[in-house]
Image (cartoon, rainbow, N blue to C red; front, top):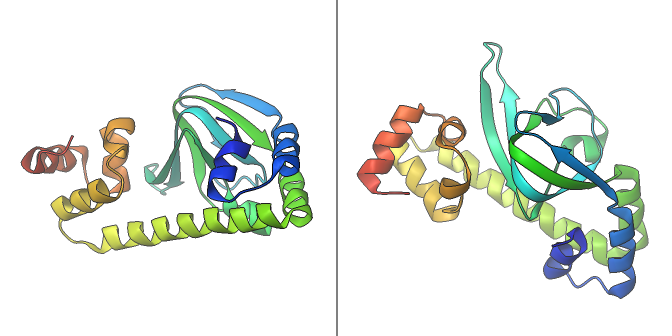
Length: 191
């Protein structure tokens, strides 16, 4: 799937815009497991389309721990939205948890296309709104005191992550140890 096809599913874009997007998403990138797409405190205004693989969005803690706050997998978009919008670094890092195949578009090109095509701007608003709802749901997950309840909430919202994301990263995302995740998943029979 191409980025234009995914965007067109969200908001009808028209043939001219689809061709413009196909020409603009023209920078392929292979990222081996463990390699960073964006380092913490780096400013990257590019937007990426994940064709294959798995990426983790994390915040580095002073003790050296990486706390995962999100994941990206095909077919979807990923990037440093804070930098894309404001030009400032977010403090988050994005790295490959599995080997990835991506395609990117320069932020300035993306912004120019959104200015030129109102349909793309409407589409992007919907993408950002969906991401915001997901972030709010995550915040609610973290306010749930019971690890078992956090697991159930995530499973109800996004059951596919339990097959796609290694459990040590899911445990970090849910703010629990891998052992707590495993024990509670066995009790609830979540796979």
